[in-house]
Image 1 (cartoon, rainbow, N blue to C red):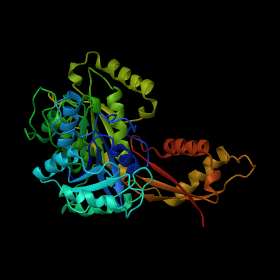
Image 2: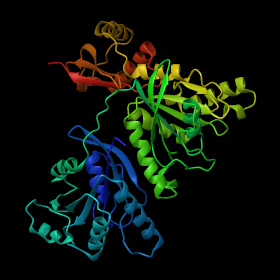
Image 3: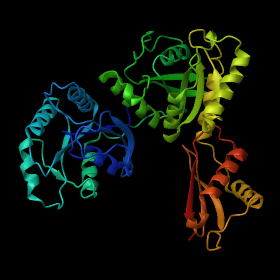
Image 4: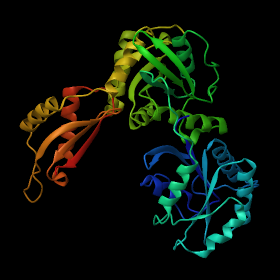
Length: 436
């Protein structure tokens, strides 16, 4: 797994979710003054000083508790400790060291975890209360105030020192392909069919795959690395520690992939879970290819294909343009064209458009609809546009007054751009920068 995992643990009400939100810069986890509000794990991609990692927030950790809810939360935290490269162990400056803190510290030492003790709710960095936490035997405590952000940057610098070095790949493949989908939709069967061998364990029982497995796939259209992942479910549906571990692997696989093959169970159709996974892949910068597996079980296939396509467009209009193909892993139906389709998806993520061509388009788009003025009657001037990155394709417009460029006009340009240049199923990044 190339994206390392950083887990936040601690007893209830010490500020885990507040710190989680502070690191991400937005309120993703629920925060509340009452202990035990956070029930399920949150796992989100985060970045600090150019290094990406998966940040995991857990519920309150109550070692030794017999209460079912607390026991479940304890198992979640223990799982997080087991999979994490670094553990952020949060304690409360206002309460000092408690028996529960000592129990958590003992668990961390027993599992040999790399841990940073973070003393939250410290109003001043020099507060002497932090020295009390040396008793936990986990090294130098770090003072923070998660609510206001004090000390969080220094803490993240310390986290980066614990992360493993980024791996170097000696021979870069043409593309990395993440095979993702709900449990039991046929991901491993598809990988085996493409490779022509039983490289991945396949069982009819959901959740068999508990790790990401990289396999080289050489085709006439390129050399690919297939990453088979465990089925991803909604966080509320995690059955056990193995599935949580597998989900972290799947999220990490998306982070290092160019293309995401999202497998859909044809008899069940494209559901909210598939929509969520598609957005996860697009957010990670992957071009998405939908593969409707088990198509051999569908009757009246020509009419059925039109129906499933129309249904997806009706229910999820923002995902209506995702390229999609029917396949059957067990019957090897329609698999011969997959290398070509995947190569096309990969090429879209590295596609470049000349600056002259971009600005010809921009001029025509502004002629069709002029840049609107703001409330004071002043309109911004768009000078030019250029491509500033790939994987995903990134485009930057240089404007004299970016704040005057309305959100509606930005959406208009986005729509016109996609209609003109394509990029179906490929995430794009549009940036607006002030022209010097």
